[in-house]
Length: 119
Image 1 (spheres, rainbow, N blue to C red):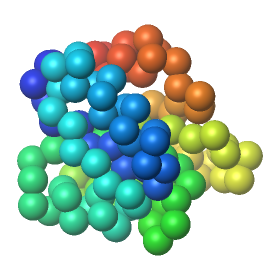
Image 2: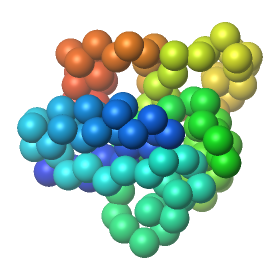
Image 3: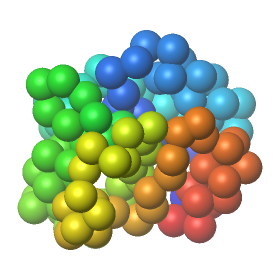
């Protein structure tokens, strides 16, 4: 993903969204954000987004449901799942979501940036 690309950060934790937004903007990305998967889908319906970084566990619509909606419409759209609660979901569910990457929280900055650059 090249600098200047638009990244959507979907996470129900305000602080996580803010930290990711600041980090990614410092690296030259345009960052949009949403507090849950339903809000994230609304953002994607109205604005051009190049990549989504999505928390797995959220109220209203979790990261897997968000990813399934997005991939049903645009299978090649890149999604990175992040979570501190991987044990609450089956590995099979995560694998079948067809995401580009899965990153455990707390997020290591270099791992996230390297993953984004490789997409």
